[in-house]
Length: 286
Ligand SMILES: [Fe+2]
Image 1 (cartoon, rainbow, N blue to C red):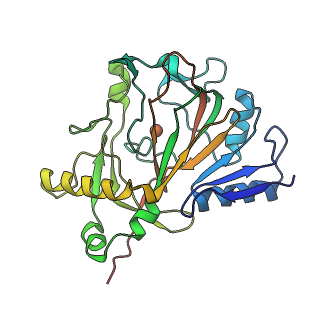
Image 2: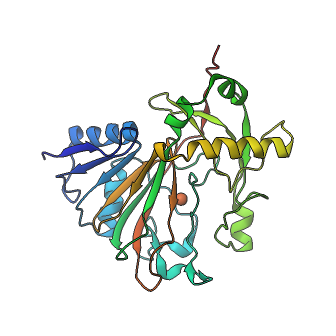
Image 3: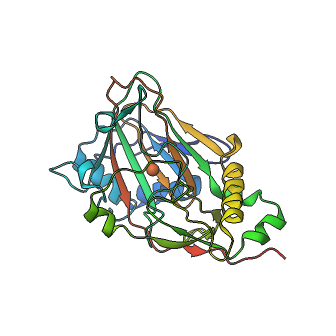
């Protein structure tokens, strides 16, 4: 297969055209896709026509599929494939209430958060419903030395929904709530494959910073979040039917947008890939 790889911004995200993921991918193509995903953090693979099991096969090119947490949002016949549907969303004050409408990284309260999240677009509204990504590696690289030194070695406890969250998480049954993990995560992580440092932030789940008074901790988190979500670190994906997008949860944050017509169907498949426990980035600037 001859394909084209094109960076979408100078910082992050690349587009792949000219491949058909219903056909078996040989080792060379598989490695090229994997390496491009690690480097660019967001890979947009255009023009696919995948069934649910074919989407799962495409996911396995990049890793092992994570069993979905919220059983109410999976395909009954293919429980490894999750769904995101506008029909599942409540309407509040005349607009859709979308899960993930603030920059975040998925399942950061897991001791081993998913390394990747993948979406495959089936039905889309006429306009709106973009997904935005910000590069938390580049955001870390741009921090001044005093800030890097101040945050080196810090950890935050990530819970399902932090006491200061402005993001409303999906409702859980008491059984689901009891089973939800929490985890102490480094504020600066080291990518396990390319060694790059990155900020690890999820304001809706971070319950302060270990060893720091609460107000100071949340002020620091807010400052880092404001820095990392500047437009210069952003790629904004405008969906087309047949787009498969895979992103690296260790390299970017993402957010959804509820700005589309709630009477129109927006329907995507979702799969997450198993990750490993996060490593702290140990190198402290001199
Ligand atoms: Fe998300």
